[in-house]
Amino acid sequence: KKYAAVKNQKKARYLAMIEWLDETCGELMSQLKKKGVADNTLVLYLADNGWNEYGKAHPYENGVRTPVIAHWPATIKPRKDERQLVSNIDIVPTILTAAGVKPPASLPGINLLNEQAVTKRDTLFLSNFAHNMVSATEPEKSLWTQSCITGKWKLVVWIKNPPKIKPWGGGHRKKTGADLELFDLHADPHETKNLAQANPEVVQDLLTRINGWWKVD
Image 1 (cartoon, helix red, strand yellow):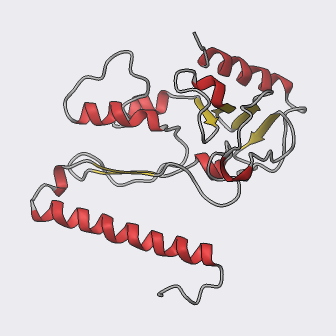
Image 2: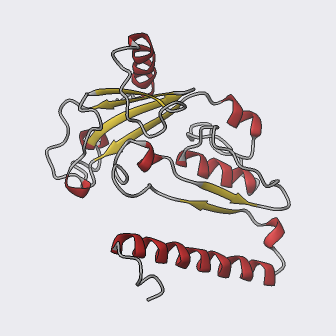
Image 3: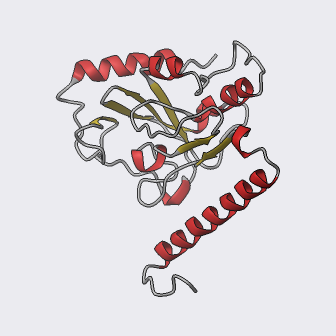
């Protein structure tokens, strides 16, 4: 009812959900404060994907660039960082380290509380899969895209023979229609200009990185 005046129902629902999230986060923090442990408790807020066009299940920034918010007053000083590369695979090693547990050497990801490790990372790899998995034991059969981000560059590789099942939201749509899409995220954050043909050496470099990362036994 509060957002009944908003004509776009999807936007009204979105605003209501944001308010609900804010209220529930507030309830959580209130309980921690009542127990006297708020200052020395690590609270992480994550989002699984962005929204709107080219959001959920897409490799573009609307879908994959999501917030990671950490609150731990006794250890973390408030600041905002929009440049360093962070992935959801970093959450487990971060929590384990915060709890005093040494992460296994085979565990992917880095400890986000280690500023040196965060700064050292220069490449981030992404993969998008069909919503309904083709095989639980062979995830590569559900693969739609592979992506690589390094510096200002982002390469999106569309799989030539994607799974023949209905993808999320009625279909994966390519922004430029090409199987290889190279974007300059600094100059073109909305990924409107495909620079792949003009920068073949960059494309090859990022393809080599992707192939080295994606190894299926």
